[in-house]
View (cartoon, one colour):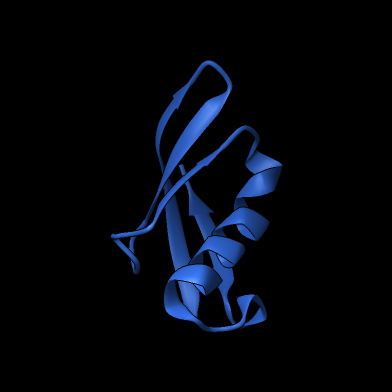
Amino acid sequence: MRLTVKIKKATDGQMDLHVLELPDLEISVQGVREIPETVKKAAARLTGRPADQFTVEVGY
């Protein structure tokens, strides 16, 4: 499943993310490099699907 992630807010080294396909998923990260893996893990917890079934596309 492809997930499209948008950076909703970025302040003081903290980024709040919005996942278009999973609007109930709320994620915060400290660095851009953390986004794909953090989103996959959070999506897996929310949906019960394995994390490796997700691909993440980041938009700014």
